[in-house]
Length: 199
Picture (cartoon, rainbow, N blue to C red):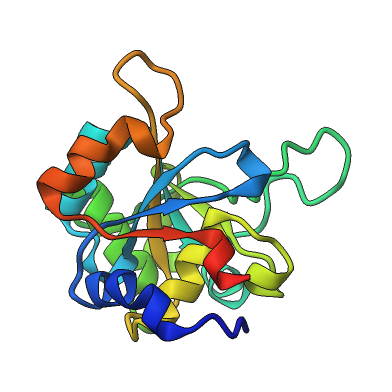
């Protein structure tokens, strides 16, 4: 793992440990797109709704490979041909306790079921409205992207090894940059981490 000084990351780690949403910047694999991230254990309906309202992008569940394997989730396209570079697994839904699956509460329920101790593929159905991303086995050092950074930060915060991510779009539908969400960050007192601090 990275040897980045914890003091530089302290605001983000404290926020994640407290169940708050943070902003991740510096994803070199996605042209500078930025993301909201929250520890999956704290991804309740309010957090999902905030991401859907202010992020507008795809809401994804970031998993380590062993966890995805336990849930029976593999990469949709594990090969090199026609590969987008996004390590998506098949979309999922909780088998029980949801209605249409798309509401913030339903998506929060699916996340909770997927990360529950002992959860297996029997607890999920597919397709669904939560989109798993499967991290590189080598973590942030192998793949310096928001997916791996979110898991690394969540681990360092003592908040588990799964996170929920949502890419952030501007009001006009273009992908946001950090200056586009400065007012939102200030209004909600959000902590920001640059992925470079982990490398």
